[in-house]
Image (cartoon, rainbow, N blue to C red; front, side, top):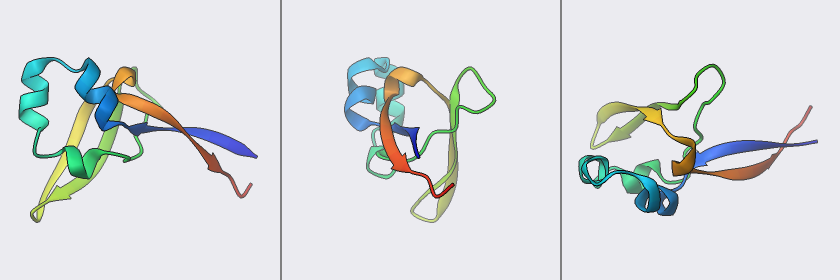
Length: 76
């Protein structure tokens, strides 16, 4: 069975995010690109944890138009 996961998509982010947010996250995009975004309980998504140079971050809110669908095989 296949399920779709939403992942952060650098191209979608650059296309749809406001300029001030793009500026704030410009050094994070290499790490964020392709990360799974959790939309399970919120109107907006969240990336609960990622690290840059040993420093921990989370990203909230993550908008759907910053993401893309990724099909993933499920074992169950």
